[in-house]
Image (cartoon, rainbow, N blue to C red):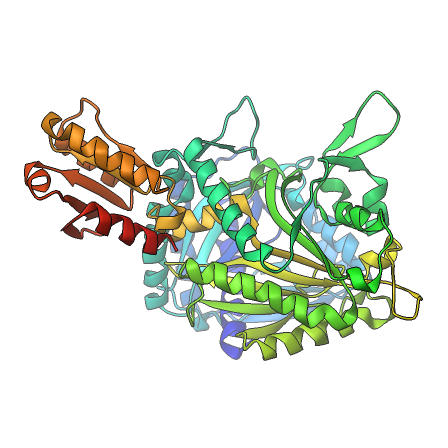
Length: 583
């Protein structure tokens, strides 16, 4: 973490404490719980009892926070015993619970004091003095509900969010970005463009895709399939349920068992809805003997997995319970790792180049490594994790990827190359990924016979190009603000005759464009010409083709684009233009 990042972290963390001070100044019986730093700001979860917090309260809290900051209070760290700590938070069962856990884990128990009489359980760090905080560079943004410690069995608390930056300019830029994000919200555009919907009768987090939304999904899947088919990836199909034993062997059970949907049939066998596909793919590999001559073997699949996300965490297509994974797993020898990973990287590069998202400065690659301070979180038998990280770093250098090593972001079974993309308004998203796994093949006893006739364990490579299709769609809808690239648009053009006199000529154009393989519509509705144009623009079609008397006289057509361009061309020129753009 850079010095600048450390400072903004301290500012945001300190503002969480100052928010708690402002709350307790107005509501003395409120119980403050935890107030961590999050992206762009902070929040604090608070038990207000029966009191409902409104926007008017946020204004009062923010005004009080600025007053506290202006008094130039110091932040002072205090280390205490368990007994002293419990005495300080007497009556606050939330803090008492945390203190008990810290003591059981042998952690130091520390408080930070601020002002005359405020102390809060915290390990820090904070600014040394509130004068380091610019009062024009933060704001409280919203109120939400949150279960204590994210467990829906616990009490619902009030979460107050705030954003904070080092300067007023940074805050204003953030506000502008948020206004633009609101206009691009995939939930809003998804409804306006009729791409997907949700139903209370089906359930939260279970999206239903319309013909247009399904078309986009199919086009993405088809494009990836064409790219990877050249490199020998083969499609497989697996069931949506499995015995829980599969995930106990793979190592996923301990990590994911609380996030699974459990299924009971007529027998006593316990099944779960699959939360991932990799263990299933190992069983396809294991079904038949393998020689080194058979490797690499590459399995690819687009299939749904299911995770029991909490209702409060569901968000449009970004966070769902039914996740369609663009998934793939390669099994190879150690000597084939570089070739396989580079092949996957080439697919990712091509795919995102065609989306205009792989330009310099618009993406970077996280070499997601294990946290050396918490080695117990990873399956690092015999140091295989270190070995895998070194291999991926070499590949990142060979491929000239703009990478940086990020500790603590690895999967529990292996390190990753995670491709991070910046969208049109500067937000960052993790989409494509390549992951090395030396662990799962050993756990399942996967083997191949080498050149000497001896049994060896293959390496497993996990890969995703788009990742979750639902999350990918949420990103591209917002990135393009609904104005999709020509190849991805569910409707690429609409033909609009100026009047009934042009219908026959227009339909002839329509048939030729459709026969050439493009997704085109013919608007012969009873709507007026002006309304037809407005609808085409509202639906964000890449092109609409206007046919009037002059077009007919010259055996041409008028091509209008969503960008505002207009040209009169022949049908042959139109088809050539569409053909080039569809590439």
